[in-house]
Image (tube, rainbow, N blue to C red):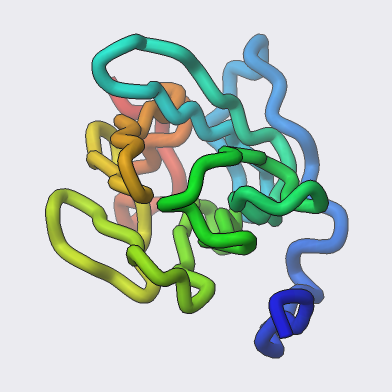
Length: 141
């Protein structure tokens, strides 16, 4: 039962353009922006560079945290519509963003994610900040 994923439309996730740090433009829709999860308080880093990744203690998880308070398939991180989202995969101990239990949430710079006994801080590159004035996309200053 753990291997069954709920249906989600992933057609727009199939081939995003990878983020390149030397780009001078803002992130365009569909462009993958890496997500950094910084473990609090140690500062250890996880960098997510694929648009759909499962975190859990199971050996098939993309991001493996092999502790008892993490479910085999605990949550998913998805990059879609220009932003990162976290989705709880019916984990026993839940997914908490800024101390609120969530089923699904959009992640923003500085958010705190708690998964079992782990707390991570969300870090996004500055290029991920997009302003949309009436005339189209412009660089944030």
